[in-house]
Amino acid sequence: MSEYYLELLTDLGVHTDIISSLQNKGITQLRPFQYEALNIGLQNKSLVVVAPTGSGKTLIGEIIAVNRIIKEQAKAIYLTPYKALAEEIAETFRSRYPISVGVATGDYRDQPIRSLGAYDLIVLTYEKTDHIFREKPQWLEFVKVAIVDEIHLLGDSKRGPLLDIVLTYLLDKNIQIIGLSATILNPEDISDWLGAYLIKSDFRPVKLLECIYIAPEAKLLVFDPRPQEKERYFVSYDATKMDLSSDKFVGPIDKFLVKDAQDNGSLEGIIDKT
Image (cartoon, rainbow, N blue to C red; front, top):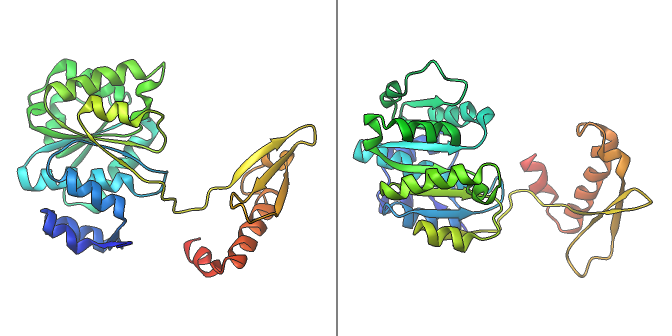
């Protein structure tokens, strides 16, 4: 089966309010790797999901967390390394699901930690999470799920040690972990350490253009990885330093994509997605 209708989630125990909320936002189907992950994660088992950006891996964590919030009156936390994205993530939850959502980052110093207990789901930076874990507010006892975005940063020299501490706390408290990453070198090692199931997918909603920088001509060689294709398209390296919205940059790439779509009979599909 290439796609799974959202209604099938009722068989996995997903609350009907979640299904209705997603359908109202135009989400009616799941990709195979999403269904596979949900089939495991909805049994309160930890996951590490590795899939390209835009593939829908975040939706897996959303459904699992919100389902436990609604059905168990539990709380969930969403961990992100990027302070700038925290409010955007929170707004996604607020707009999709019938739950209360709070945000706590370094910019929220005046907000008492204990007041975060009023929310069903709290979006936190790694640093704020570590601070909260040290403070041990009473509401932490009700946290049953932690969505950990960019979990590959565990190997980062700057954020890795802090993330290690946070994950160790989650493991010690037996909190379900949903680790998300678009790129990770050792997913098996991380999933083994977390006692989590590993779900991998190479699905990409948008075609990936692979390029090689050629010197001294200062050109980018854009190529089609299919062996039967012989065509190559050169883009000036200077053009890549322009504003990405510039016609001088977008034009050559646009022509390449359109020609590729015409050759493969998929032009209509590309137009529908732009």
